[in-house]
Length: 229
Image (tube, rainbow, N blue to C red; front, side, top):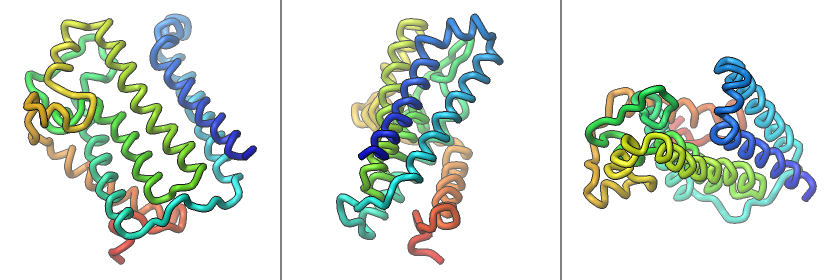
């Protein structure tokens, strides 16, 4: 229990500092430290919290899984991670949610933005879900569940922040996209398709590389590597 508590504190520290530095504390700290100084502070705090999480996680004794994990759950997790990888790669270019002096939104939501206007944050949430499915231990619920909650809370906070700051830009973007994946498509506000080459090819490469790395890094074959090779 003590180890789980320390892991929860470390995860909470990462989430709390990230949300604080990304929203209410960002402007005053940038003013005080400058853009470069703020970025250094942000990076140091983030990596410090990640180091604490890693140390607390690996210090835990073995934990029993809460349910049996078979090929069906591994297959579902593999598909979820493929979607997460495509969302992540697609979010890196042309993302209106990124900080910018003059935010521009496209005339129509296509590709990953037709799926959700927060593809990067939903990729983190789906990563958390996929890892809980195949490693259902209390520690994983704390870390992966915490990261998933952080991503979804962060997406909602980002919508509120952008709506206050640039309502004339963000409200139309919200009208043609959705917070929940595939909701805008289901409601006819966006059309599925229009993926760019780097969305799909980059997502596929990241998915294959990340799932392959589980074996040398953790001794667990993941993704299609459970059935291939």
